[in-house]
Length: 83
Image (cartoon, rainbow, N blue to C red; front, side, top):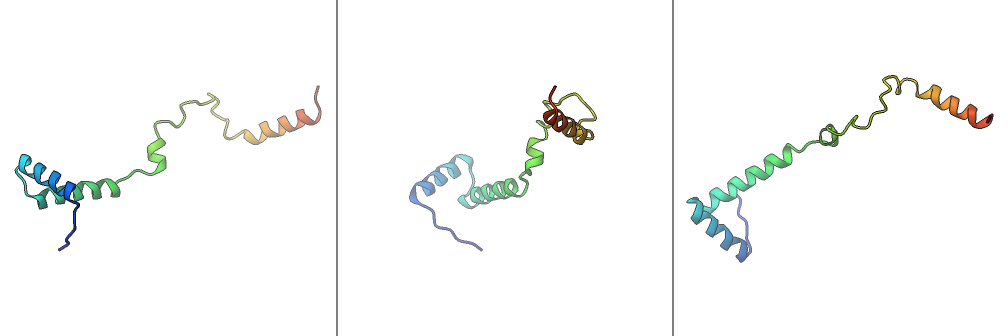
């Protein structure tokens, strides 16, 4: 069993909500903690959060990730020997 101390204003809000929902304060606190714990344990990682944005501004070149070394070499050669 766990006990907590609440500030008076939160306790008043809790009492009012318990009355309108026809629940006990303990039920409301338990429900709130369950919802919070579920949210915290099921948070998505950065990949899952950004998955809808990946590839939105693609180059259209399918082999771009494979040929990047050749493109870099060509740019370096061009910089060394302009014209």
